Structure formats: structure tokens, C-alpha cells
Image (cartoon, rainbow, N blue to C red):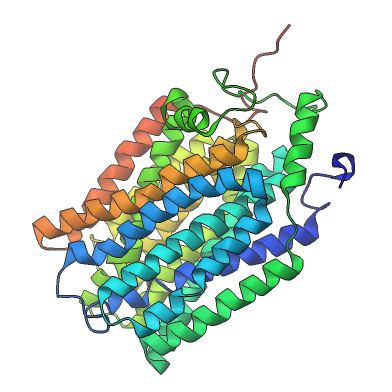
Length: 433
């Protein structure tokens, strides 16, 4: 396929764009099925000793370290073997998950299933995002990532609710088996039949940059990096050598503390307060729906007002929502608190990724996004460890909520202080004479 014949933009590539949106919704289904039912029934169904907070968080710690590493690998690998192959590998890794949960004799099998989930999420979610960025224009970047995450997190919320009802009707194991096998089989089929590889679009964009054909505000790309850098060079740049990328990476890591908390301790906290599985599914679902639904707008908003303000505000609002969970009781209050947390997430989540994409050259953008996502999803592991330690030493889940709320406030302040606006139109690189 000639690079000259490839057009960038959502409308020009609507067919592939919609296929990729469906893919990420199925990715959301896959993680969503592991969220409501398993933590709530960890003691009664999966043989975990009572109040073993460190053991309870083990499966999310495993998930975080595996997914973080696979994000890093996926970005680099996709620049060599193509986006579609990496997506397919991610779905194949998910096939055993429903079977491991169904036959699990102990909690260690759930941890093993979550390791495979980390491989699946690292490869598939990374590819749906990277593929959409390949085929869309720079001025659609916030909207593109917003739509991607909207689809994924709405999928996650829907799966949490459906599996809660299925587990109540059929039993936890059978409900998760049926839902899981149906989701993964459909995803593999759709990938094989309809998804195209989008790497040629990324190469076409890089060629245009090289030829000086991109007529737009020039992004503030880092100066201290080679035209075709190796993995270590991009890793050090994103992790600490570029102050802006480092500020974004630390914020990404800490915001995952919130999602680890929602995954592990929201169901436990609500179950301890007498909520039924479907009620827990709906309260946690509010967080997912507001997060997912609002990203439909917050990504596009950042294409107009920039990334920096929504990112910093999002960190602070999200932390406030977490703290609010403990300040009152009842379904209405907990749902409202979950909604505030979800809205904070929606402000920061697509726009941290868009900020990385803004200042990453097409030659190494896949790698840079992969490394940002490595740090971000490592936050699941580090955050879950922190939650587990906080809950273990205090003997209650409440202290984990305070740990996360405080972390979000501090991290948001660091981002405000060290970061800057990355949108090329609002903060372009100085013109060279």
C-alpha cells in the first residue's frame, strides 16, 4: 500500500475506527468481568482467609506489574510486527482466563488468571489506542483517545453489572465462564475478519514530517533525542530526562491508585456495609459510566482548551471523590461519590495520554505511549501494595481510601508545578529562522 494513498482523519477511516472502538469495548468487558464479583466473593467463593488485605490485593499487584511491562513491550513490538498481530496475541492470551476462574480451587488460581488478564490488557488496550492515533489527525487526538477510553470503560461498567446478575442467577463460576468465553471468542473472530493493520498510516505521517509537508503548529518535541532512538533512549526520556513527560508519567502512575482501590476495596467496603452484588455492580458501575461517558466530551474539550488544566483539576477532583466515600452512607451518597471520582478520572485520563502523544515524534510515538502506559499501569501494582499495607496495619479498608485521596492531591500538585501545556496550537515550538 503506497503511503501517498493513505488519508488521516476519523471520517476517512470511519470503518476501521468503529471496529477499533468495538474492540476496546470487548477489552473493557474482559477486565470488567474480574472486578465486581471476584473481590466481593473472595472469602465465600474463592477460599481467601477473612481480612487478608495483602492477599486480597495480590491479584491486582500481579495485574499491574504484568500489564505495565506488556504496555512497554506492546508499543515497541507493534513498531516491528504491526498493530494487528499484537492485538491478536493479546486476545489469545485471554482464552484460558474464564476456565481458570471456573475451576479455581484457591485464590492463587485467581492471581494466575489475573496475570493472563494483564498480558491481555497490556497488548489489546495499547493497540486499540495506538491504532486509532495512527489513522486520525493531530487535531483529533484528544477526541480520539476520549472515544477510545469512553468505549473501554463503559464496557468495563456494563460487564461489572452483567456479571453481578449472572453470578447471582447462575453462581459466580458459571456466570463468569459463559460471559468470558463469549467475549474472548467474539473478539478473536472480529480481529481476524475485520481489523486492518494501521502501521502504514504511522509511517506515512512520519514521512510527511520528514518531507516538511505537515502544515500545522509545530509541537514542542524534546530536543535531546535521536531521530530513530533505541528503546533505552525513549525510556529514559519519558521517565525522567524530559521534565514534562516525567510529570505526566508520575501522575499517570498515581491515578491508577484510584482504580486499584475501586477494583479491590470498593466491593469489599460496600459488601461489609450490607450491599448486594447487583447493588455493588451498580454503584461501581456509576464510576465506570461517568468516567467513560464524560470522556466523550473531556477528550474533545482538551483539543480546544489544552491538556494541562483538565489533567491537574482531574487529579484533585478524583481524590476528593475518593475521600467523599467515607463521609456519609447509603446508595445515593456512594453513587454520587463514585460519580465525582469518575468525572475526575474523565478529565485526566484521555488527556494525560494525549499530552504524551502531543510531544512524541511519529518515529517513536508508539514506544513513548507504551512507556507512559508502563508507568501508568505499574500504578495498579504499586497502588494495590500501598492500599494493602495501609489496610493491613490499620485493620480496616477505610485507611486505604485516605491513602489514595492524599496521593492524588500531592501528585496533582507535582503535575501542576512541573508540567506545561503540550497542545501544539496553544503552546507551539518557537519558529526557527
